[in-house]
Length: 154
Image 1 (cartoon, rainbow, N blue to C red):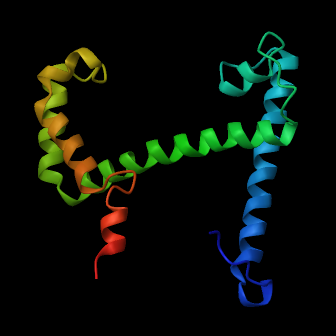
Image 2 (cartoon, rainbow, N blue to C red; image 1 turned 135 degrees about the vertical axis):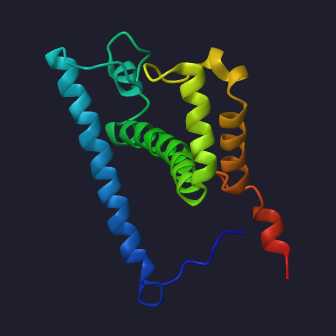
């Protein structure tokens, strides 16, 4: 069973949501147009949009421009949220627990020096950094992991 459609007069949020949706769709369309322009001018770097729009890709015929823009736009929105949330938590944790951030920085400096950032092969030699990241993800996961339980608690 779906939601009961409420008239606009008793659901003012619908007006705000339509405005937000329209702005987002316009941004998706403008971004895709920008990639099309960059492809024509030979300035487009690698991207999902470029791959999708290039003549050598499989046909986009079943999808209109707005559908393609929405699909690729939502991929970028998902990427932003899955990256920004853990990064914000990392920074918040570093600010709230500077003693641990100092330990992490000292470990990174010892393993990598000041000339480079950590790489995957450094992972076994960075236990404090790994623990810090795991604790950030445990403390504030980027996705809701307890929705069912929290919805059923009294």
